[in-house]
Length: 225
Image (cartoon, rainbow, N blue to C red; front, side):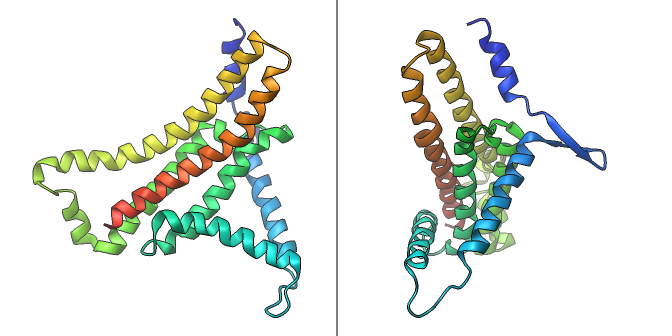
């Protein structure tokens, strides 16, 4: 148990892999680039020779998967927020793969607080943009004083609280899963950790990706109302 703190510190420390122009590039950024490169290559290979008439089984299956994932995001934001579904779908795919990539021996980028904070900031910018786009600047500013002007400071504070909650929820759940796994390994090193590893690495990782996207979509929908 005495090594838990050291193991946790080592796991959460993102080493600088190399530098570009004096700017250090961390391990989480490199892993993110790998995920992006793999998906760009897969998208290029899978979307070649698409046909409008007499599509192949591969194309039909690909269309089904894309439509299904896109439908998840569209179901959250509704018809009014359909324009933001593509962003939510991209984040859902990235987080799903980022949380699962530990199975291949990589350190999940979501264990880096900087990554979860960046995603949360991107989401909050989109949330506020959705409100401005739907209401206009004047109505958007006026909404901070609703239902009464007295609550304006609280509503303004909420703009900062939302990305903080998104960031810490995602980071905290990933961190909590790691701590639980280490505790289980100390109690019973053989057998049981495999079962819980399958849960935390597969099921829980996908759940956390969905929760992040669901809350972002919910906030977007709320901002547009």
